[in-house]
Length: 194
Image (cartoon, rainbow, N blue to C red; front, side, top):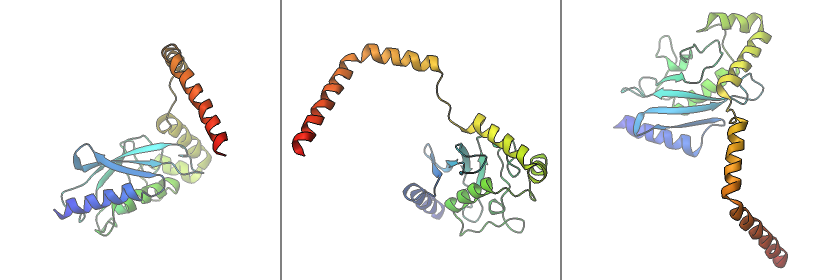
């Protein structure tokens, strides 16, 4: 009961006052399965990317941290290829820093900060960590490439767009004429009111 009330309150807080670049919502009707999106921060290799995460709330929440993982592939020393995240706040003490006073908003903000400032001294991916430490330009280039490939929304193919435009032009000429007439009528009305 307490768990459900707290989750509802946290989700309401996330929908009313979300941290910048973060959104979180319920997955269908299951309150213990959530999804989130984190927008890659500016001046990072993840800029412009939208990264999707899966959040599973355990039965013992808030006395146990939620399970979070990236669904969108990301090139990062603290996030492995399965999307698991190496972050102290996601682990119970003594190895971790989870406390019941932490909440989903705090965790998602911490993950967003981890994206901007990787911790190469506590990596999940040793090769990426080494690259980050000793060859940062290569790391940045690869991270940007992964972001472009996996996290940036691509436009539809030009042939699909052209086909849709042709169909709309054929089916909507009368509607377009009506819109033009309406907009000119609006201009006349504005001039009268001024």
